[in-house]
Image (cartoon, rainbow, N blue to C red; front, top):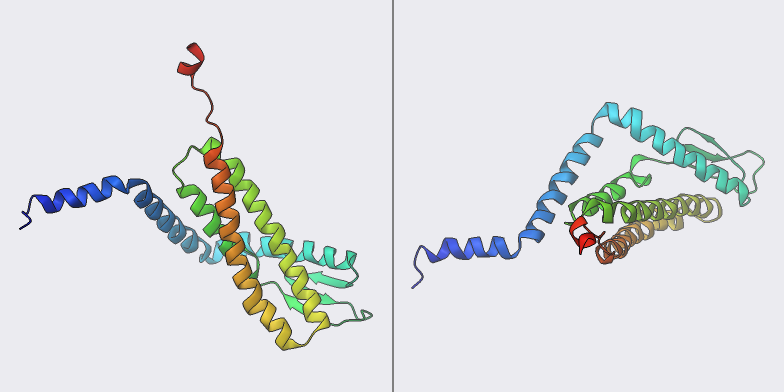
Length: 194
C-alpha cells in the first residue's frame, strides 16, 4: 500500500525530473496565447499586420514581374495587368502572410532553455528562411492560379502549402534549435583566469 507521503514525493520527483520540458511547455503556451491575443487586437492588425502583409504582396508582385507574370499590386491585392497572357488576381490575407507560423516558430525558440546569446542568431536565421519559403508560396500560388484551374489552385492553397509550411516550420525549428544548442558556450571569466 502506498502511503500518502509517497504520493506528493512522486509528483515532486516528476516535476523535478521534467522541469526543463515543463518550463518549455508553459513558456511556449503562454507565449502563444499572449501573441495571438495581441494579434487579435484591431489596432495591431491595422497598423502592424496589414502593412506587413502589403509589404509581402509588394515583394511577391515584383518577383512575379521579374519571372514573366506582369501584374499590379495595390495594398494586399496582386492582379494580372490587362495585357498579361494569364489572368489572375489574389488577395494576400492574414492567414497567408506567415505571421501565425512565425509566432509558433519564435515562441518555440523563446521557450528553449538556453542562453539568448546562443539562440538569438539561429532564431533570426530560421525566421528569415521561413519567410523566404512563404514568399515562394505566394509567388507559386499566383503562378498556379494564373495557369491552372481552380481545383488545382485550391489544392495547392488549402492543402499542399498548409501542410508543407507546418512541416518546414518544424524542420527549420529543429535544425536551428540543434545548431543553437550545440554552439560552444562563451568562456566565462573564471575559465579565462585558469
